[in-house]
Length: 272
Image 1 (cartoon, rainbow, N blue to C red):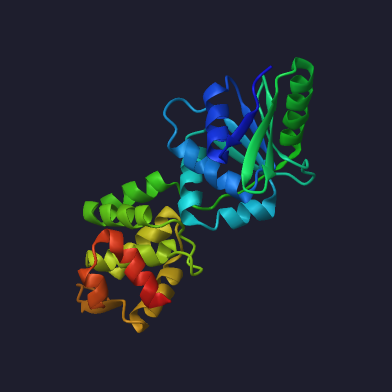
Image 2: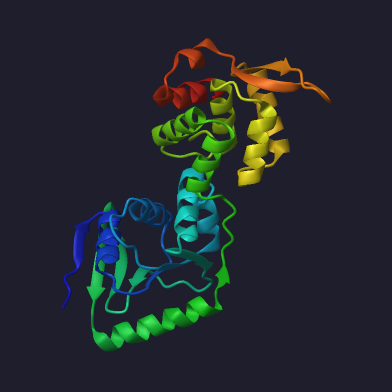
């Protein structure tokens, strides 16, 4: 019988299942932490990922996907065809990982996590068939966040490679990008990057709307907030026809002197 996965972290258990799976994987009723860890493990996975069907509580999915870092990487996995998200109404008591040859129940005991494994053929077959059926009846979860690969590629093309490098460096320095006090949101990050590279508000907001980050109106409102707080400045740039456009510039010396690894921390401290 397959050994239980005891005294492991959730990322170790997920990595073990992904490495050993020969067919589709059903990830059933994952916790908030398990969804985050799955996206991280799958994003960094070295090799061919199996196709993962995630059946999760809708509220939990929405809460987790409010983090742009998690959501944009999940969107990458979806665009690659290695992840699908659907919602489950009647969830089992534990979180399950179901493959065609084993079932792993994720059990939390205080700060410990264990994966209780069975490879009993009859039980595995029945469980697998059950969740294939649940999957077919489940509603698709609509993730509106764009894939991070698209975000980076288009930012490099439409603004500049330096802007893309700055954007990536800021994301890499953050644990979360929610804009709720625990991290900057994606619109704020985009505007800070645009100001650092002295891009036009029109260009960064058009890019953001086209790629699916947020509307031009959201970019405009956030620009006004950042400008009122002194994080960014604007200067008018005349154009041949129509009203002048606004060039974004860093407005606070603390931001101007910060490198990319510090920019998010400094901006967050000013905003708070």
